[in-house]
Image (cartoon, rainbow, N blue to C red; front, side, top):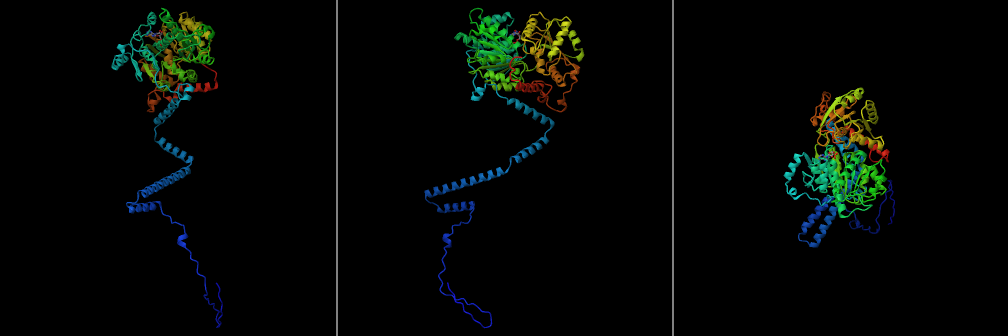
Length: 628
Ligand code: AMP
């Protein structure tokens, strides 16, 4: 472009005139065509526009319709994805700390609304949940492989036809008659005599010679249950005949196996009975020996071989048994694990496991040993747990480990034997020894005196010997020989009095004990039940005298008070006057679900405390295995 400037001067400022000359044409910008910008249209508007188009098309082609629908679907999915992303962003912005704070604040508000009782109940529930979450009683291999048995073991035993034909109402009435409580599916019928149970004739004869003519309630229901191959939890008070109830089924299984194919060296056992103490194991072993010998006596049935497997004895003494096929093992956990680890025998064909005093086994330190023992089984086994006391929560735990178990309960678990007259006396600490002598006059011998403390056991024995009383003593620090001597001489009647710590209180069967004197009241009410259960056995009556004084914890006295009330015994005035603190707080008085004691709740259960203490100790002392 070019321009010529001309100047006009008439005294004014010069002006410039612009002159248009040829000018190249302005470029034509095609704004509309080249601009790719699209104004924002909201999703909702787009959707509406599409919908309008679709409806205006009316009968457009099917293909078009399908395309439109597809587009729509994609759009919807886009929207969903966008929504997800938005949520995710929001979630990330909320820190964990904020969440924790909110939970805390919410809990604080809820807590402020709760009463003390509700809080205590919640606390108890937490403890119970912790107990329930303990691992199942099964081998680590089974746990790892997730092996779970769902059907009970099969056996060839059937009740006689006339019993099978009875109605369930008839079974119920029979159970009611003998105060038997059962729980479980397809419960075998109760049977009122050994012949109908199909017990071998020679054994029936032998039992008769021991004045055992009719099954006791636990046998009446427990033996058919075990004969039928069912897993079982048997609860019966001490002296109710449970040893026969769990040994007889094992004897029958062993007889059947031996008859099919005789056992040779290195084979067996068919079953094992586990006991928490050497004494109890020895006693059970002696019973089994008698029963198996009586069965084989007439030559109609084969001889079964039984091994006692406990600490403190030389296993070489039983090499004559080990050199033959092995049918039954009666054991304490420690020595049994030792033998299994050394492969002195195996559980490759073991089908039957019974735990006597099973509650002790499970909850007092043997749990890991029992799990270890389980790991040696190669196949499903029939499992029986027997005890005089088994609180509900321990039962629940045990039930986890059994296959369709049947619970047979004869008398309330933990309730004391009603054949024992329970006398509780207030005796000052310093007067106990002298009063003990007076107390011994109440009945003729044999008498058992229990004390919680080993030194006290020794002191009492020494005092009695000085006073001319024929007394023996037994406690955990005595050697195996000393313990065996004490049991033998007391059982045979050579000695009149046995002074014992809780070792001897569990399960031991001494005949005709007239009087049990509890010199120091145990902290756990279950131990008291076991101790007084040494008398009043096999339907006979006995006396139990218990010394208490201001050293006895109030909670223990309260447990005792409730137990006496429950058993319909006389409650002395000093016990009656003890108030239950839970009643004052308006709390529930249902008793402790761990130990069964009625005088306290779970949060101050002495047994639970003791269990925890033992577990801590067992973590420290890893090599302390098996029978006391
Ligand atoms: P247990 O509860 O197994 O320790 O047995 C306690 C005592 O009861 C033992 O002395 C047995 O001999 C005895 N006993 C077992 N079964 C019977 C029965 N059916 N009738 C009478 N006494 C029995």
